[in-house]
Length: 59
Image 1: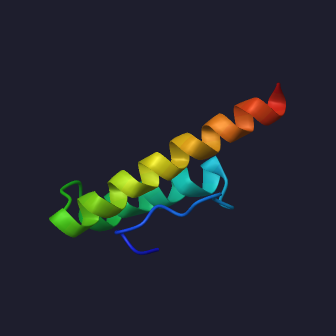
Image 2: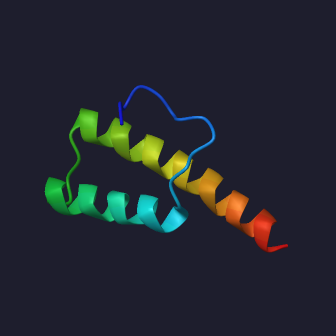
């Protein structure tokens, strides 16, 4: 995933995105570079969208 774009209509689950976020932090050793921070921010936005979608489906 390019850190410059948020995919529209994400096909990744919140669980998969959470795992990617955790892996990013592990790789970075707890301190993100500017590029890693941009990737992190996009993953968090995508994760929030996925969570919202899963809550709506459950309702």
